[in-house]
Length: 117
Length: 233
Image (tube, rainbow over the protein chains, first blue to last red):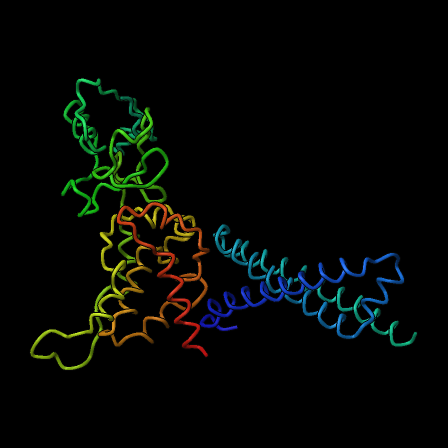
């Protein structure tokens, strides 16, 4: 990412992801209020729906992007030492990527199980 | 009335300390501003140093941290302050002596914002005219007196005073972006890109809270981001 694009793009991404997360949370609240989950099978059934699976995936992606911009801002503000700053960026990026891949695996398994049932 | 004032003389002191002063009720006059009391204290102790000039909130020289809040001593009524009054230099900048800070960093950022009209058209016979509506857009922007109260109350400016322009400079940046006579919109916006110069602002709004002229740098910064967004689409 070029230095030019850093500022505005990050700021915009933070706002777009915030909006999406807000809408998705409203959906979650509404859904689980109307259809309370009783057991594990209910959870599996819910997440196996391709649309739910996809929007949940987008939700997790939003969290990761939002968290990246936020933590990146905190590090930029407080960590003045360049080497330490880069090291922290890498730790955060790796952790978030790990979380993302793990979520992807969970969602993928869930949708596969839904399709085979 | 009791005072606790930050003292530091680099020629004599190895580190700063707080010194107590007191003014009896008979030494105070009704309607006094904090600066009047400071001048009275200076008459007693001439080593006490602070900047002041116009004494009526126009020059912006006597910005200081008053009971934890940045403000101008000359327009802060003494009666409104809780005793003991704690006076410190504006936070985050190098102290030259007592309440006097080195504003170099602040002015450097001000210069970065190119606080002047850029217009390459041939100079007209008369003034460069603008409509009353266009002129109205500059209200709340041009009144800044550069007292530095806002930028030195901004945490983002404390952490990155060399990279983040700070509220005062960004208010000036918008003052010229909003000017119908200015032709350097693209250049100005290009220079503000990147994660630091503009986008270190996290809408903390300390600047709005302390501005002695009642200006709103946060809103100006919002307008800059909006304009940048519109341009990129």
